Image (tube, one colour):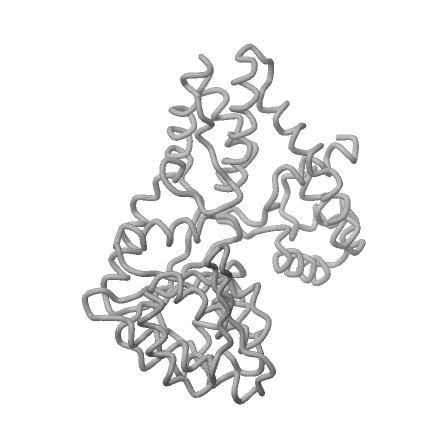
Length: 366
């Protein structure tokens, strides 16, 4: 048997977890003339969702992670590199002749991989290069087969050179044969980009917050995939969701590890807790490194959230864990959210990584 759970990369069939309503909504928007903004914490499955939707639409699509883009010229080069992956090289060669700034294109004779760069360009030329590449995609599109351009971690646009967001908006607002999708994991920054009136991207597309997978759907998914290994598929599935709180990534990760334990020995006792222990030991060095990057207030907040169910903004929490005044706690929560340690859910604040939470509890002797 093959382990039915997958994590850590784009999840496709047969590992993709349902999200029927979200897929339907995304496809409906991408069939229109509108653009789409998807917001959720990291590892909720935004990229997997848009990847599945784009594939089912059978249209050319490009995914570019802006976290890994360093400059405007790098932006242009990486975007053009992905264009070469989906369109015929000869057709592109003829169209690139009209570029005002010529890229350096190198073909690896062994792998046939193409490397593209804009070397020693000025900031003005970098913008021209980026405009050329963006307009190239518009020329390649047709009314019946519009390409889908997906910018992942779009909140990082503000880091890629001065006023890159304003320049990007000025170019793509004229495009009629492209659907743009913007993915973001830092809700406050993404909402500022798309909902602040002074922002160049104000109300540029349909904003879709992506929530966790509903408990009942996730329970059914887990139960079905464990039923051939154990008679206690429901109990094991419930214990997994109790620990992960339906977080898509960590649920898949824990389920994968539990499945491996049961596959080796279907009589193993407490497989969920054994799997959590295994994951904590596996990430021990990483967690220790993360812990040592925190200041004292952030440490106190995370310790409190690991051992207490009370809200970190409550007076009881501050008193029990010596977290300081409410203004200090709020600043710490904001910082921890920006750095991905905690997320904001319908019930308040919670730690993003349940295994890091358990690691803190174990280290504290709880």
